[in-house]
Image (cartoon, rainbow, N blue to C red; front, side):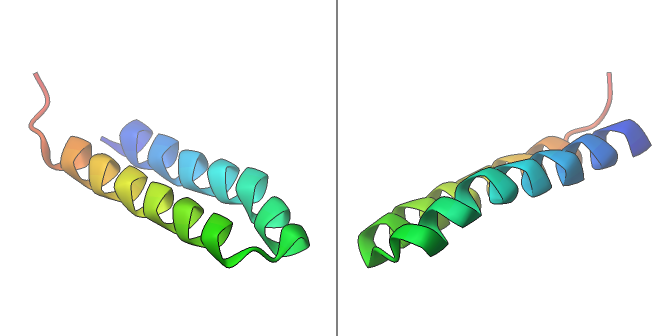
Length: 55
């Protein structure tokens, strides 16, 4: 379970680190909204995968 949590945290940090500077540099509201929706969808998927019992 700890490997899944570490992987989830690493995925969130890497995605925000990759997309964050682009959004901040371009300062486009629509791009920021699309990135925000994508991050929320990723977080929901990660939460659901962490809640699923291990086989």
